[in-house]
Image (cartoon, rainbow, N blue to C red):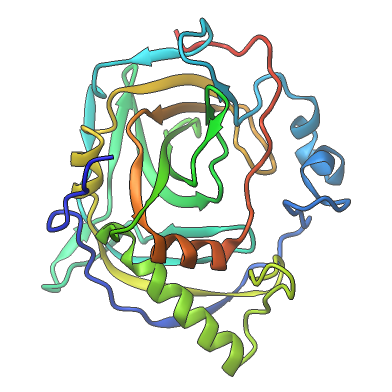
Length: 290
């Protein structure tokens, strides 16, 4: 693993607190209870495909397998720039970040928060990113310490997800600095006001309770792009969301190059979301992207 670019990956972070209700209409979990992954398909008619689908994700990517396309070329168009006034927090299942379409930068200039990529002539706009620990996808049977999903959506609602496998390193990665700050703030809010209740066993917040989000002034993707050569090369396949409702409308792009995050940052991420990965889906006829 090469050292990640420190200067270019830096985040300018300022955290403020706001409280939102995030109780899902049909609760689901990652546990072995009746709301866990084995039962998602039975929890709600809208989740049925979680149990019956033929193109479910995540998968174990077997290098050289015919159902996975190895893409050595970059996206035909990749437009990524810093995002401003990003709201990050634990949404009941994992750490997730979202942002307004239009906002102001640190110089009070009005800007559009629009990052996008093009796949086979279709434009997908980045709508949110979130994390899973450990990784959901495996490579030849091996999983990573974590996985970052950059979720993009097209005008026809089809999704394209860029998946980055995370590997723990000694040195912190500036892109993830805000996670440590978020974890500390959540602990303070939990102890001081009780807005966010944590599980007694895992220490992670409990799904369905009131959630707290935090503002990150600026998220700069430059370091990630440089360290992954603009998300290239990557494995491509057609699959699904890895959480309910498990819709099978996702163009997956799993980047080969792992991304490092510091041990302190990883510990903070695990403290926030604990275990939140869906098990590998057995799909003998996984469709390859044409």
